[in-house]
Image: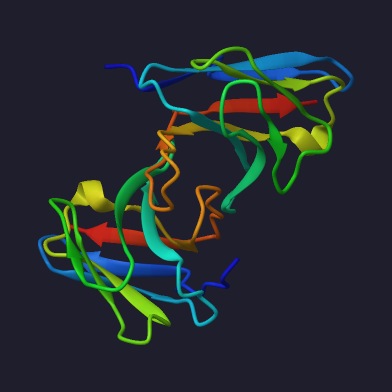
Length: 115
Length: 108
């Protein structure tokens, strides 16, 4: 019963390098989300995908791109990493049956450091 | 999004009840009140949610004020495993906005 799986768990990049964070869910959920969490702060929404083939910007989308590859997978790409993108990244999913009270299920996070 | 106010931190003794308050005076009539918690080095996990009535589940109870401008998460018997950051989130959609939350420390 995996739920939401994120890879990698840890990553160190140099400024300017690119990388893709992977996220997959096995709950047949429609909606998926990417959040970032900086030390001592709450989570901020980067991008979300309400359904396969759609993506929308959240609160802090600059410097990121996303791809909803299929219903299961939602990836987050940093094209040119910057030290300000050092953070813990969380992927989440929800069933999204059009209701307003659905639960989010989170992965365990990717700790990213940009030097 | 409704503005929320939560204490920065609270402390409780093990096996005692804990009442975590949240003010959300600008909540709209259709916003549910969600509570999540985040254990150390983990992603947030759902705790409970409600609209108008008090709610209970196996993890906690949620008491919602009659005017809906505040709510209280109640852990009936705190354990060491309940030490976490607790987030109160009034939200009408699924794009939940997580503030700084309340750090709950549980003493043995």
